[in-house]
Image 1 (tube, one colour):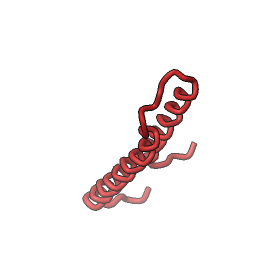
Image 2 (cartoon, rainbow, N blue to C red; image 1 turned 120 degrees about the vertical axis):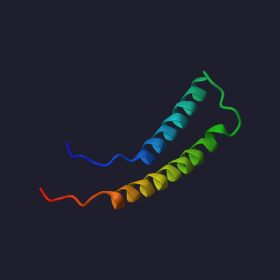
Image 3 (cartoon, rainbow, N blue to C red; image 1 turned 90 degrees about the horizontal axis):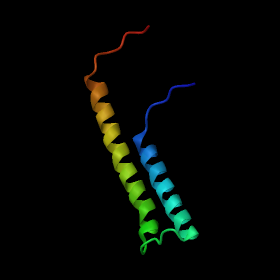
Image 4 (tube, rainbow, N blue to C red; image 1 turned 135 degrees about the vertical axis):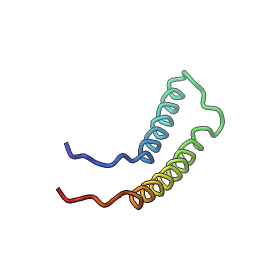
Length: 74
């Protein structure tokens, strides 16, 4: 399996989409009634939090790469 960098922004986006999907599913089954525009606001809020997280992680990653000693080729 090919390794890839961890991207917390994608994790947060997926969690927000999954939450909205479960909310709509429960609302359709009659188990839970979504209050007002909660489900409509959950996706933009999740995307906003994911964008902020991605920006912060990129800044931290850049800062740590600048401070790290150069790697020797193996």
